[in-house]
Length: 188
Image (tube, rainbow, N blue to C red; front, side):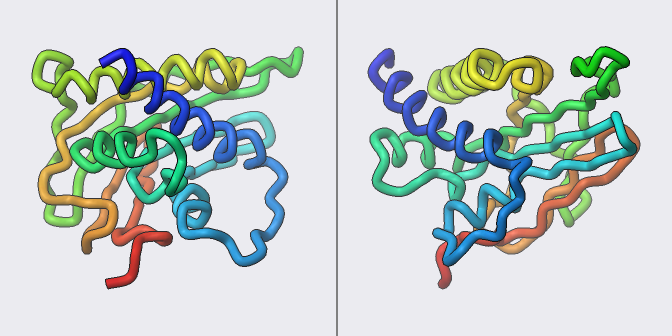
């Protein structure tokens, strides 16, 4: 299991750094790869004013760069669960990020089904390793932003990232949505 964790961490670290580190640049992608299109779509940044921000991120299989070491393990783990990260932050008077406690998100799909968070005892060992890895990568590599991201695993019900549907994440008083199939999914 330790080897799988290292492989998964390698794939996820590349994903995380490329997704979040350059997010503030906002350059138009030239001929983007499908996984790049998926990454852009699956990270929502809501600027609620000059100093307040909400981030919602769905880690889904299409985000994973194909051909990377561990990419298939990462895709398989994310295919069986919905992994959501979220943060509500503000800049204080000293220019430092502070967390705003906004409660846990509520996830529903277009059929009206409310998705349930999975307890650690209900998940496969690999899913628990994934969650531990994601938390470590974000808090160790992305400073205050990474430390303020909270991650939860939900049962996917019938929703798949590359199937037809919609995932709605109600958080901090707003319903953020991801329409599926997400951009970057393989064409049928």
